[in-house]
Image (cartoon, rainbow over all chains, first blue to last red; front, top):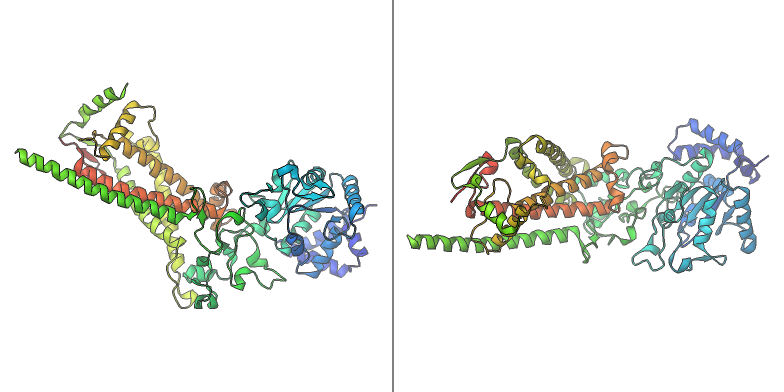
Length: 359
Length: 236
């Protein structure tokens, strides 16, 4: 008989009590009602274990770092037990040929039945030579592994959107994975890194319910990316009141007013930071007094400064913000109108003079 | 038809003979014009203040709602603007042919191009007199199309997409206009385009008001009173 998740967990020394606690916690973090805790438990007890293969391409491992810091120790234990058994370059015990052999075995044994989680992205320039793993370009490994996967998770801004290695002029042509993988369902979990609880939540959802969570237009799970930071920010009352930090060290900053004028990207960023927060729910950037930089939004690395509300646009060759471009256009139009009006008045006066003179 | 014949025809249009008065703009068009003008004034002012808010006010947050009121003014005026635009589209179908002018450019019409050239020369002080038109002159027509019709569509699409972000994923605004956000490269980029659209309209308003006043004084037809009474009277 094939091993279930529950079997694996018990073998890892996790008590039944801890297991049930994990199920309730997961149901809550996924926004499901309490009845789902039992469903999750049941699924994990009866369903054959789905292995997860975790590949790392061009990236900084901050997704993995975030993931292993999943606040609740239970979540960490459970998820890591599910994962590290299979293939995760940073976390697995095996190395070298042994590890690569293991990857091949999983791919064969669970063909069409494993989940592929990708951290980082493949650079496509020079036939993918900018990222070599086990002597081969990462893009090849990625395509091969994705071909037999059931579903693909794109971890972080790298896999989802490209992130800093794709910043202009993108010398290595770092490319988001959905541009390389076709015909597979892909869940994007953006952020630099994504929140640990969001990551474990997505994995658990995929493993227990055997389907993708509901996604938004950009392929992100609605349960975590359905609202902006701004919508749930605890400083929102100061925004509505019109109370803003004007300088980093002013009185308003000490009072914890809204960071909108300091370039906070909360109003344009979809993520769960203002509800789930970081490090066991201790804090998140805005709570620590710095604006959101919008790290879970597409192109955040190329959208101008983090410290202006109205950011620069690059469509016109000059790096200026919309208000400067537009304001200049309006001012030029105003000046042109004034000059034109003066010239017109002169013309009109001359004409009248001629007419009167003729009389 | 070459440009010269077109010009000759335009000069001898019996409709625009001196002293004649023609009914051009029907009541819904005129009403829409002035409601729109008011909306644009409110939208541009409140919109600018949303992007670059006023200095902070001291005191408890619960005692004030300044940003909230500014945003409310913006959203309320935006609804009036959008609904007005829809009604205006409806009127393009049922109103007279002048009501349709704003929604297309007659790029295949030689007469129109001849008129556009003449208007350009007139504004560069190279012509003694412009042609007379019952509706818009071609220059005005071009600007109406670009800075009223196209700009309104751009502002309504980007505006409702951004509004939909606040209203949430399931809202009708989000469902109908949410596609704009990834299309233009994210929420922040949509904000930038929305700002540019605003400045485009502000620039247009400056030129529009100037042109209307100037033509009223210098050309051979009424302008400002036409948008009030609907009647256009020709001179000389």
